[in-house]
Image (cartoon, rainbow, N blue to C red; front, side):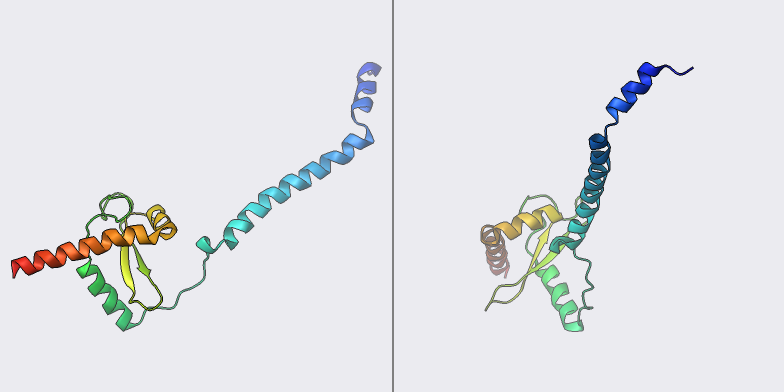
Length: 140
């Protein structure tokens, strides 16, 4: 014979109001987990749009810019460009009315820091270009 004390406790604990809340909580949790990946997939930084293949002119410009790049370290962190972060991250900085510039970073985090304050890091890069030009003039 079943113990009625436990049966009455179960009936008391499982009131209709608490039963109705349980599916609502599950739905809210499910929405939270589904909405997070959707929001990440739609963020501009994680966009998976296809970029057109570079032209021969662009490839030649990039090769020359890499060869002429004055630094062997990241302009943001000072870490080596060929360090353990998977190789350099190349970024073409574009400014209205000025020629495009190649900027090299040790990682994507440094690229993000650069985008927050490009003027500060461009000064370092300009100084490196000027020092390299002065050095090459002394050598000639």
